[in-house]
Length: 112
Picture 1 (cartoon, rainbow, N blue to C red):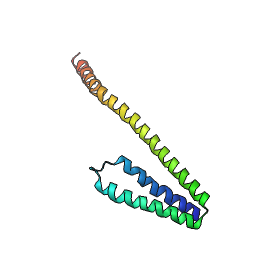
Picture 2: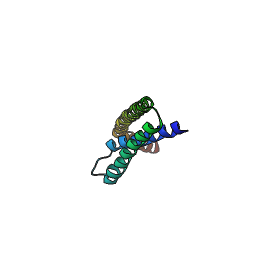
Picture 3: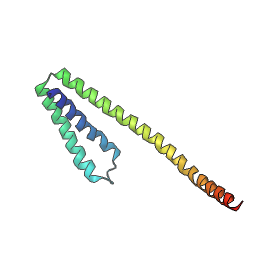
Picture 4: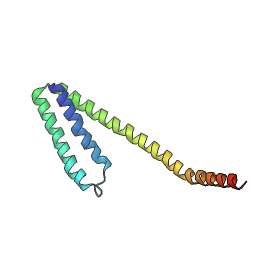
């Protein structure tokens, strides 16, 4: 149970450390100052508590794996977001043409 809690707190705290990169300082001062600093402090305290309760090699391996997986997950999500936003911008360009064509088709069918 202690191992699961240790891993959960590592993932939780590092998650918010990484989330800070996606917020600009001007837009979300509260998030960048409060949440990121608290999560960084929580991440460090979790590592220290892990060193007290577990072996050094286990803690080091857990920290490296958590950091790698969270960074990989955010990269993957960010790439998917860029692909989706690119598709949405293409849809936004085509949408008026389709709408006006549909309106013209309905008017044509009503008249003829």
